[in-house]
Image (cartoon, rainbow, N blue to C red; front, top):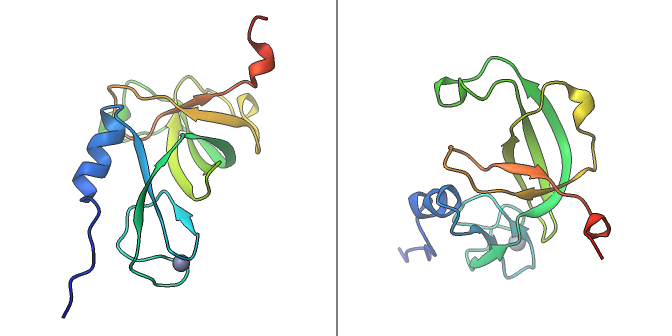
Amino acid sequence: MPEAPTPHSIDQYRHDYEEGIGLRGFRSGCGFVTATWGLVCPRCGRRDLAEATLSGKGRIVAFTVQNVPGDEFLNDAPYAYVVVELDEGGRITGWIDGIRTESQLSEGQRVEWAPTYKPGVHFRPHEPSSSAPP
Ligand SMILES: [Zn+2]
């Protein structure tokens, strides 16, 4: 039985975003892009996944404020647990620190990947460049 190509292991995938090296995803031959580690295209089942580097920018499609965290986030609660649709396509779960109430975020809000020494895929609100000084 032929072995499916393995562009990188799940450990490398996690290592790269936790170390701030890069947020990687996969692009299938059908054009589908996913930020979720896998070996086959979740849409069509093809095995011709190629690595894709993702910008880490996208918008919030779902979120909740986490008040009772696991051990790794004890010192960060409350924070927001977010589902982000990335600009390249694909959705990824992550978190945003410093969020105490749901009114601080909104669906559709722009966010960007912000590597930190803490675990998980960390995002921060991303303002459009119009807020930058001229
Ligand atoms: Zn596909």
